[in-house]
Image (tube, rainbow, N blue to C red; front, side, top):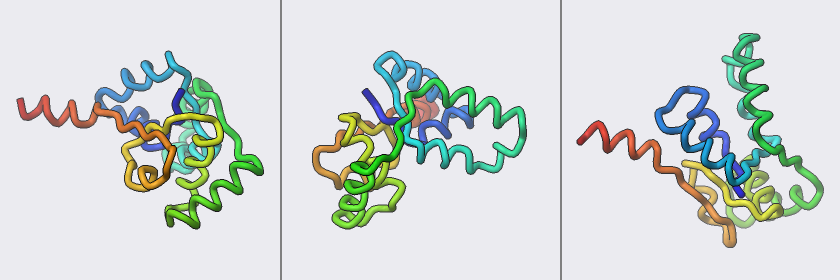
Length: 134
């Protein structure tokens, strides 16, 4: 089971080649997002357009949403303190750890510091680059 970071969702919304196919495979194994990811996605300027906003809200409903509770808050604070990563990433990491989920992201830099946190980096961006060079 996977906790999908906002960069992967943004790739799909921007039409990055391979992102849709990748996410469809994740849905077969259960895909989650954090309430923070919802906030990050909804903060995009394109969500001011009613049709785009409705499309995004409908798309988000494909995921199981993880809320932030007391346990996650405490763990997130400890992660931020111990690994000096941004609070949003700390909360997402804590959510993944509490729920025994692997984080799916291209932003591996912050998450790889955290012990016992499985980080999955997709390969669809690399596949696009390598096919252009072939």
